[in-house]
Image (cartoon, rainbow, N blue to C red; front, side, top):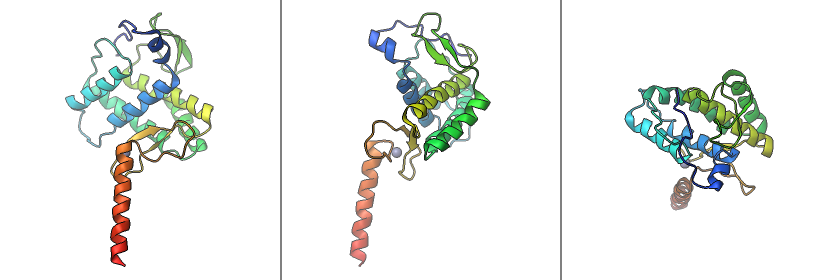
Length: 203
Ligand SMILES: [Zn+2]
């Protein structure tokens, strides 16, 4: 069971209104999918539990989280399911994956203010104190669904750099994003440049 959430003082009005925004929730989803995507088949170790806790804190969770290795193992299952939404290449495919997840893993749409500690926002989990994995999957499905609705395109993508499995959110209307980070984009640009040079020498 999750601890009572959002017990800490809310620092600014800005924080109060934006912490639960669709975009903040979707960003948290991508960050959690990335820390939960280890290929390690073993039980999550203390380092992975600490990473997940750090991400939860970075996105506004306060108080003692008491996240256990078992919680993280269950959240890994959710991360693998959510990864399919990021892997979808068009809005139809993203919607199909989300519809499957919404049918199988979420409760009814409801509003909560966590007993007045947060602005009213929608939840798809069955209870404010639902287990971490249920909360993670339900809140992620909620945010990604709204993004597909709002933009009529997949909400994100998977990094095109071989060896990097990070997912990212698509934002703005610029050229299609292919990499999770500037670091991956630079590495691939340098690699492509090297390949072109050695191909030129081979001639
Ligand atoms: Zn990457």
